[in-house]
Amino acid sequence: MAELTVTLIGLGRLGSSIGLALAGYQARPKMHNRFTVWGIDALEENRKIAKQLGAVEHAHASLFGGIEKSDLIVLATELEATHQWLRDLAPRLREGCVILELSPLKLPTLHVGAEYLPPTLHLIGATATLNPRYLWDGLDDVHHAQADLFVGGTFMLAPSVTAHPQAIELAHEFCKLLGATPHFIDPIEHDGIVAITEGLPIVLGLATFTAFADQDGWGEVQRLSNPAFGRITHRLMDSTAPALAQQLTHNHENVVRQLDVLMSRLAEIRAVLKEGDELAIESLFNHADQAYSAWLKRRSGGRWDDLLEAVDQHRQTSFLAGFLGGYLAERLTQRKDEN
Image 1: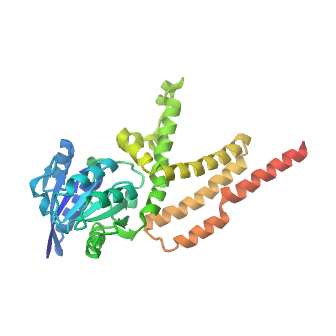
Image 2: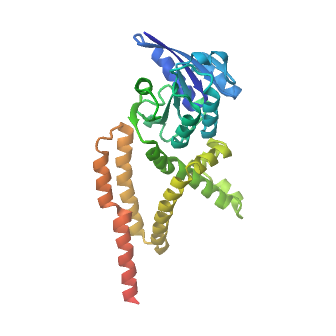
Image 3: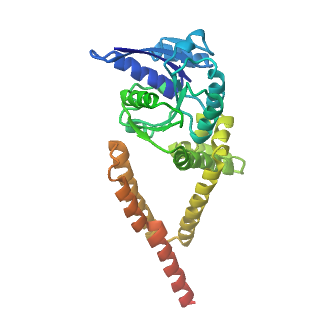
């Protein structure tokens, strides 16, 4: 039986959920590994709750003396905090230690690792897509840590170029133990995708809230706010202003590029909406419903084998790029002829 010492740095939802998953694994009648789990978090509440939940055996506010014995470090912190931890950890860890970092962006984090970590330490970037059961909750704190948070999800892995194959294998098997399917991804591709899945929601929440919070009538808007408004703006409360700003600015080229695509699409939708054409708007939602249902089916079932085929089909039949553009051109041409 292999015995591993794991240190979780950051005891929010992700870090504490990893601890709970390890505790659940060790409660099984037959197990092949034994984990000693330590935790580090500056917030007393996070440390207290993580211990109460059983996610960690011991918790500290900062680096502790025994961290040199860690076989695996899991960095579950915000971007800049992750970079600072990599700088602080470099001289403290023993040779062969594997660092699994869960920050939102891989390219800048791998660059920091290359600068500060010796080749005897093995950095592997990882991004978790969660159990489909939690796809909609938008909750991100230690109070909502779950042992099955990663079950049925995916860990996107981006190892550093110097990571040893055995270290990569350890990270791979560790993610499987948590209940997720590991999948390797290029860090450049990863950050480009994250600009869509994380960056744009941040921008939309910021724009939606600030566009109206200073306007006359904001008091009544607040009274009428319900889950739809809360869901699109909740990222403003999920993290701190510096952390959100860093996530955008460290990936600004990708975010701007995807924002341009989004603004173009919004302009197309606005043009149809301005005409009040209910049939076109309904067709748009019908098409979105089909594509959304296909995505949700894959995401919920964790089945991606048909993804490339579906992408090709989507490119060929895209409503907004095809039919909607043609529909607008036809309507405008008809209107010009009528005049």
